[in-house]
View 1 (tube, rainbow over the protein chains, first blue to last red):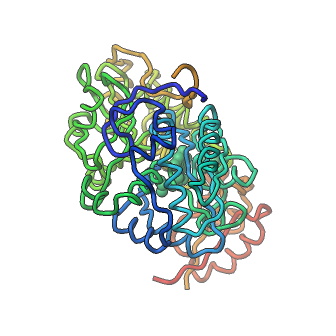
View 2 (cartoon, protein in one colour):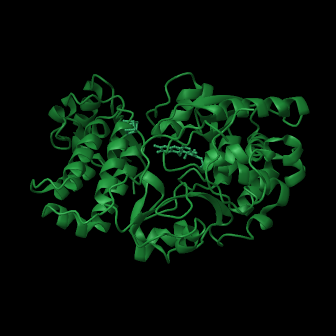
View 3 (tube, rainbow over the protein chains, first blue to last red):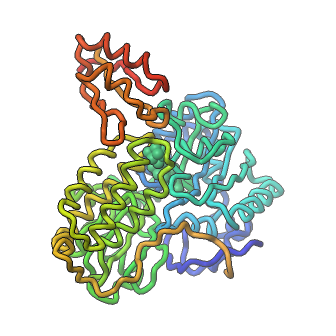
Length: 427
Length: 69
Ligand SMILES: Cc1cc2nc3c(=O)[nH]c(=O)nc-3n(C[C@H](O)[C@H](O)[C@H](O)COP(=O)(O)O)c2cc1C
Ligand code: SF4
């Protein structure tokens, strides 16, 4: 079997149970022993009702209630279901870990989603590299075992930031480039082969597979009343043991980071929600809970579960400048404001981080942010603006010192990864 | 019934014809791309707005009906 480089992994939970070695759950028999059988002879209404009662929301970043998408797509004719494992965000590895460690949960969830929507076509859209061959072999094994009602087609997603945006997913599955399409109509109305298309993050489908086995009240027994269940998080930066963990939604951020062994020294800030997310001052962040409800009041959200701790010795402005330079390069270059505005914002931030003493650099960054916001076919500009605005506010003191020609950081090693992960190497 | 303007950003190539035809409502940014705003179109400008929509060589400008209120 293709080897997947084993990311540092410390898990304890439902979809990534502790103590089960890498690769074991790739065997269908082992998977069935661990999780028990899945009954696919259920009605669409029953699946949708269970998902609604469970309160399952999307784990791909937007947190949309799954039951509403299932209902909308089920109403259309001959729908298509897609498991989205593109994971273009370089700071995230939770989908790769999920697909390497518990791929059959995702494939089970895909079958239930087909059941719920009446779909007879299903796709697994996965980050290019060894996971493609792995999933192909697993789909084939399930076919031989006769467990699936719908045989999924595995398609490679290009390793770019926007490849996993839902209209880019549909474009790629229609044989086009993995770039966002002009909206509307939404893919839920007209997607793959013009059919209504359900696009769900692979983790969302894994949770669905467990709801199918254990029911809604079991699902709700962890997490918060409004945001039930657990979520996978990728913890990085200044932590003892970076990696993927599974935590109940609503866990205090300090406790989430403790799962990665805590931080070796003082922190200045925490990036929550990835590169379309928000910097928060470390002091404030630790006591907030990782949920939409807990982070909303400070303008943040859990997104797809990326949490990066920034050491007090690192420069938050340089980190942001590097991330925004990457995001600008990752623009699909289809929309004027995104194509022009993101590189301009990246350049200005780089000047600021480089202590260039031109006047008005922070003001110019904010002006560019206002110019690109809401002016693209997808949310890439909006997400980038969110990151940038939070940086200027959380690192306001550093902005002032940089303009006076001083950077107080003592460690200039890069923290935020800016290359898409590449699966491969020894496992 | 009210109407709002929007831009298909993938189609738009920033020729600026719309801003010339409807300067009351459309400005251009520093790269030449239209700034249309989200406020409903005034009734007295509706005719001009429809002309601007029809004139866009890229069919990138849209006037969408939205229920009043
Ligand atoms: C630029 C961009 C990139 C995205 N990349 C991914 C991705 O890699 N994987 C993913 O599941 N969702 C991604 N999304 C979100 C998808 O558009 C979509 O909301 C999601 O797949 C829906 O699944 P969920 O409801 O289960 O979260 C991205 C969105 C944007 C704007
Ligand atoms: S907004 Fe940017 S990333 Fe999104 S489709 Fe347009 S050019 Fe591409």
